[in-house]
Length: 397
Image 1 (cartoon, helix red, strand yellow):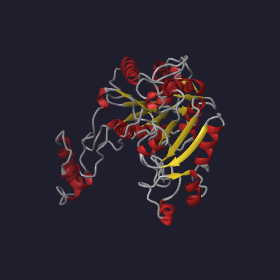
Image 2 (spheres, rainbow, N blue to C red):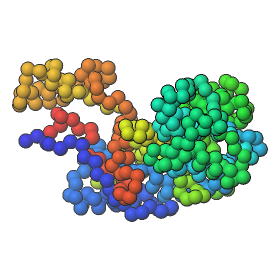
Image 3 (cartoon, one colour):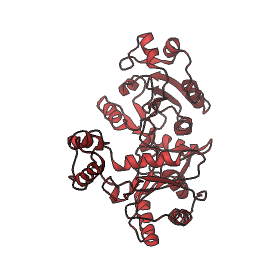
Image 4 (cartoon, rainbow, N blue to C red):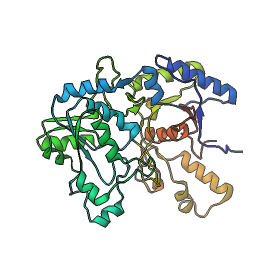
């Protein structure tokens, strides 16, 4: 009888990871313990995902508000700093903003509307329609925003982010002005020294500001790219991908993720004799249909992965085959025909009718999203995910 189970993802519990821990050893030991406990047979091309949070924690990749402030002062001096397009998040941006404000004398904060780039809404589309406001051409100050839309709390967190961010900046003895626009160059009406706080659109924002004549153009990816007074750092992403750790510190996106993935793969090869793929994963790339929030607040889903995870899936759409090539078959005859067709499929299916409706995304984005959903972001205690059968298909018996 053919195998009846396809892809399986298991959350693997580990000890609580602390700074300085040997994460490769801890993950390896945790996996070996799980294999023994559940009588799991390991195969080549099984996958292990490790959340970026525990890698950064093991590295001690943290920074304080004072260290952020020091870098801001070094790179902006005493100029008024225009911050454009931050996301609305206590976890992702509040402590970063606190550190920036501590290093500045005045901030002009530009919020995109009706939502930030990951889908956290300041106001609804219905409110825009009701007030006949075009968010792509209308620049609002705080007074105009309040007159039009009043006070709006985030639907999940119940936070009025306009008020919250304003008070947070003022608590650092920093002057603040808040404006609302989706045009990066509108900031140049207030200051020519700009910090781009957007994540996935940051390169475009920087280009538009440069073309418009801004004097200083930096992104969150340009802050803490090297250690400041002993801080953590990330040469590639700076403050992007950071999370709140305490009221005075953030955990940065991990360094050397590629090196870690390769070292863990080597350790697992020695321990199991199998070639296991490894990736470090952060936020999954998916959108919540209820809250309209796009989960990906990290700069990438996976900052490090083994070579076997490079590329896109090359898959056939079973229902298309069943409704077209094999519409006149059923039962065992259909199963055999489908199995033979899949076993002999072309390696490159992009654009073919037989692949229509499959998911043309990077493997690391798909697998990282699966890992993120499996491990969760709360108290499951499973920062490692073990996946089997991901590369199998209907033809594999």
